[in-house]
Length: 362
Image (cartoon, rainbow, N blue to C red; front, side, top):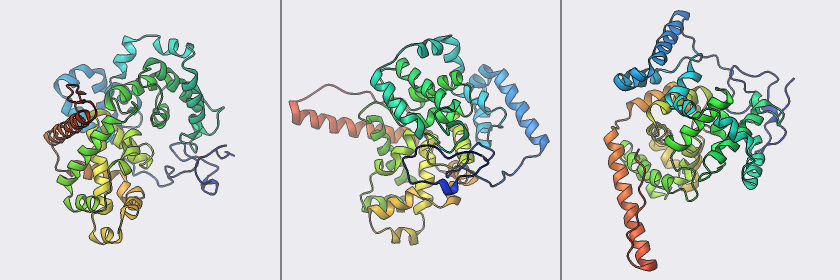
């Protein structure tokens, strides 16, 4: 019989822990599901698997000449049997690994920064504590999680280790061998979520402004409600973005979102956030009961289950009337706004300044 995790930072959920894991390896927690997944026919599964294997065998051709096909197939959902390899290729991790043979092994042999190592040791038990891989520190999951986080902190000392990285690394280890998971993790941290984990969270603050601008376009009544009650984006979107939704979405939804995220980038996280915000507060009756900041945040942090189901999230993501140009416009606006704020601050502190931080493109 399985035992509950040894240590949790939240209220004990032992009463919800089963003696048998679900099909994804969860003994308990909100990401456990006993609901059977709607099965495809065997013929459909085989057909999809063949299509994906063919794409992977001809990856460079598809990426250069038929990327739309890759994107569309990611939106339909990657077959479970192919997902690990597909993510490895979608993220560009296969290129990183090929260019850096033996680097992961060499990183593991280095001692690392003692303070960072202690931080990682203290944090690793908190990740998916109800999953069979991470039940206790003797499980292979916690050992490999420590290795991946340590290796990255040495590989990219500018970032080192941030607590929000740990659930992403753990999530990847559930699908990939440790070395492959490490290179996907490198790609996610250094490309998809570039500069998110640097102290100061300047990029996240910029993206908070972009999210607010996109919400104004896609759901004006909800935008006005949040403005009225001074609900700043960083109050509800920080964990969503920093952790890549790994602590927010039910498991099947999370897998589908990451299929799209690794194909299309950070815009997918923006769209998921917009769907959650819009659907949670779309009804006037709900907004009327949210008479202040705290009530509004409570609704957004605990949306109805049906809003987080995979088909609802994916279908509504696709229905959002947003073009790539809309993201670019909001990015330009936020860049100009923050540059103006910085110039004013520099002027107040020490006179005019020519220094400008180049904001990363979406």
